[in-house]
Amino acid sequence: MTDDRGVILVNVLVALALGATLVVLMFTSQETLLDRTRRAANAAQAEALALGAETSVVTALRRDKNEAPETDHYAEAWAQATQEQVAISTGLFSVEIEDAQSRFNINLLAEPGVAPQLVLRRLVAVLELPDETAETIISHVAANGPRDALDQITALPREVRQALAPHVAFLREGGTVNVNTAGEPVLAAVTGSVTTARQLLKKRNDKGFLTKEDILDAGVIALTNAGFTSDTYDATIRAEVDGTGVILRSRIQRIERAGRKVALVIARRFGAEARGTGGSLPQPEPL
Image (cartoon, rainbow, N blue to C red; front, side, top):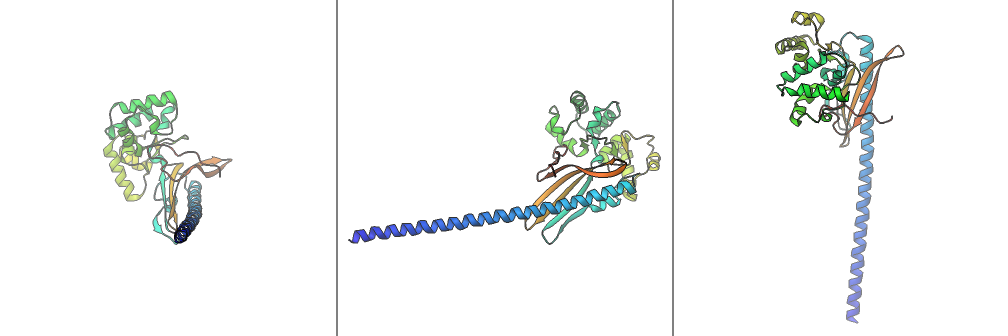
């Protein structure tokens, strides 16, 4: 009888332990589900916040195209849409705008003419890359047409692609270099001189932009595949809601449509890096 009572007691204790385990698992699963739901809701709010900022950038660029179409530079009103990282009520928030035409557009090599080839060769020399780099790129584009990323030019060594990436773009429409936003290596490539590029950069930093007179004063008779305006821009927007953050990368293009000057998002991506190796942004998902 005593043995039976001992067995019953053990069975009861086992049942209680199992029950307690099930209760813990049930509450844990419930908490996990609630946490996932909360994070999903926060992510949706962060995405909405980022899309709102994107709309502000598009509006600023459209307004600039209509009000000041002669030149584009970082001292203009559209650049004021940039927002350094700040803490807002929901979390962190920032907006970065980069002129995609501050870089050399490799897809210009697919068009007739030798000027883009000359700019590329100069850029390769300024960056002190192997001599065969330019010819490899020129041959590849000639054989395959416009590209979307440096990774597609597999004959280039990885270290060469990494060195080129900050200075090149893959734009499908136009895309001559804007001397008002280009960095020193690209500016040297389109002017033909590192010394001239540095002189122009100093003047640009002092007054905020360059004019045709500034170029002539620097001894440059004609720019190679370059100008003073841009129509393609990249926006990087970071938004956070209660610890859940998103990164929105958008490519915005300004065009004329039915006689009207408009700015459109032609590519959009949430999350991962979109141009880590000199590539273009992927096509946007349907809105």
